[in-house]
Image (tube, rainbow, N blue to C red; front, side, top):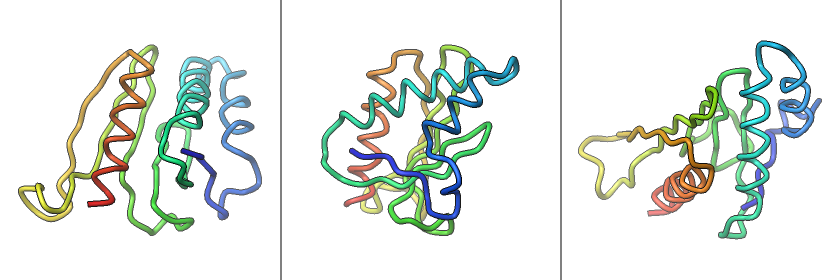
Length: 123
């Protein structure tokens, strides 16, 4: 999985954005956690490009290079915790655009949750 920042935020890469954030007293833990997450996701199958819209609080993962496009996951990092929301597969969602939420302090579990969200977006 290759995580790329959407074109409308191309003034900085995701790495640059979260590295800068990691050097601030307020965003140090979040920036560092997001850098670890992005590095780990970049080594995960499947070999697909995933687009990301980044803010100080959220990393929204999208299916296309368009912030208005369909998001399949949203991630927040707070301290050691990753809070992840993923869109459910259309065929198993109880209503249109249903999302599930979860959290973990385990980096590999967080990646697994996000990869599951990507797979659901393909159904």
